[in-house]
Image 1 (cartoon, rainbow, N blue to C red):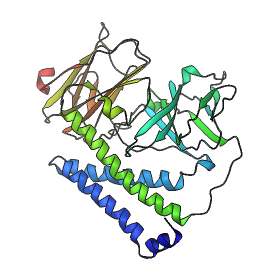
Image 2: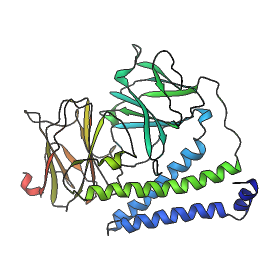
Image 3: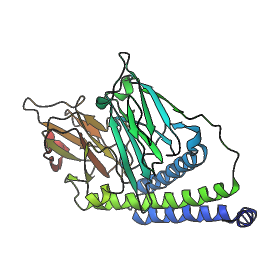
Length: 362
């Protein structure tokens, strides 16, 4: 795009109009796929506004890999894990970085380097991944990890030629009560301040964000449709969906979709295999986690109440049935479900499930 073309698009407001047209199309895509319910439709439009806010911020204010800027917020997308605190940054394989941190109350850390992006034909690809049980830490829980193309002493993760992002997952088993890990990121080859705004680059960013928002909406509507095809049955994530949204390679991802009335409960029974971590959560139709800081919308291997034989029964309902492991639907009649196992020592047996009247649970 030439400077003249950029000036013309800015002067004629074409770049902004094109961006708004893409958002409008994404909104129409959401409403076309929404349940016939004002609550779900409004959540869908809120979902679009959250995606737009996130990708604008991360692509404009936190996008320069030369500044080594850590972002501490993450969109509610693809059933984000309530036990995970997500931290990320834009990287470039032209530079070398050092991540310094302290574990805090985190039970585990997963540090991943990625290329590509969600909502694009290539997808998000995991280039390298390092878990906290694989790197050395000091007695006080502090640590340092280097990211570079060439090997470095100590804790090191090799960047690929196309590596463009860092994503850190820290696991807090009782998130509302615990102190998260803390991090700083710095360039080893000299820190730089942000460059002045480049009009050409800004126009390209708006075009890219508009396309990315629409791409992400379409990508995860495909996930929802896949889960709805096996409603009330938990299955492993389809390989073709996982291939373009790679997360933690140590995790087994399993999903379902549920729909119940105010007098019904969705009951799952499972016997988790020996593993480093597991959790089961519910989310809305748009694959957003629910309000896990104020309601119980998930359980994990520490918070779940198990039977003497190690089995766990989880009850999903709109009101408290007086059972252990009740997950509150938070006013939702339908939504998705995720079951994760990290470091499972054997192939997990997926839960059995059924929908029953709440009155029958007593």
